[in-house]
Image 1 (cartoon, rainbow, N blue to C red):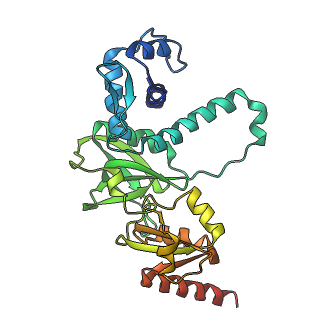
Image 2 (spheres, rainbow, N blue to C red):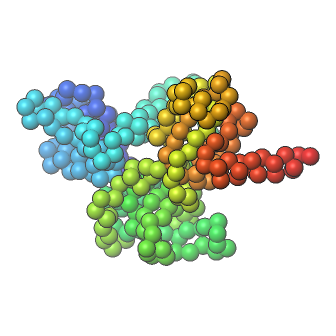
Image 3 (cartoon, helix red, strand yellow):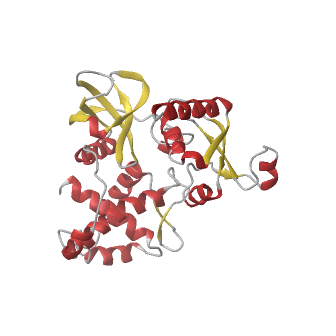
Length: 309
C-alpha cells in the first residue's frame, strides 16, 4: 500500500469518527463500503485500526479515543493540538474537493486556483519520517547562501502558512536550535535509517503560540492597534492571532483614539510576517503599542511615500 493511500485512510478515519456516535462495529460497516478500502475488507482489522490511531496522534495530534461506557469513539478535544478541527477541515476539504471535481469534469474550466509553491511532493516522506522518527537527508537552497547544502534533519512537525509548507526540526548544521525550513526550497530529500527523538513536551501549538506565521525573529509583547470600523469587520471575521481581544469603548477611550474606531489587543511577537499583515490594511489600521513598532511603521510609511514622490 502506497504512503499516499495510507494518508487517505488517515483522513477517512478521522472524518468518520468525527461524524459522531459510532462504535467499532459502526466503523467496520462504513469501512466495508468505503472507496479507500482497496482490498474490500468487511471489517477494519483491529491491529490496523489501533496502529492508524497511533499514527494519526503522532502526525496530527488528533487523539481518537473510546468511551468505555457507551462504546462510542470520539475526537479528544483536550488532546495536544486542541485545534484538530482546523486541520481536519483543511485536509479533508482538499480531498473532498478533489473527489467532487473528478466527478464533475465539466465545471473544471470554471475554477481558478492560486499557484502552489513547489515542495509538496516531499510531504508524504516528511510525515513518514515524523511517524517513524527517522532522520532525513536534505539538500537545501537557502536565500542566505549562494550554493545548496546538505543536512541531516530531524523533523518535528509540519506547518502550512499562506499556501506554503514548512517543516520544523533540528538540522545537523544548527544542532542547538529548532528551525523552520520551507519545502519549496528543498532540492532533494531521502529518509534515512538514523533514529531521532522529539524532545518531551515539544508541541507545535506551543512552539508557535505567541507567533504569527513562521518567523520567530522577535519577542512576544503586548500589542495594540487602532482599526477603522471597516477594518474591524475583517479582524472580527478572521482574527490575526488567537490572542486577539477587542477593547471595550471605556478601555479604548483611555487611549485617546478616534471614538469611531475599534482597538484590538494582542500578545504576539511583532515578526516580519505579522508586520507585513498589518501593512495590508494600509491607512485603515494604526499601531498604538509598542511605541517602537509604531515608529517603525511610521518610518516605513515615510520611506514608501518618498519612493512615489
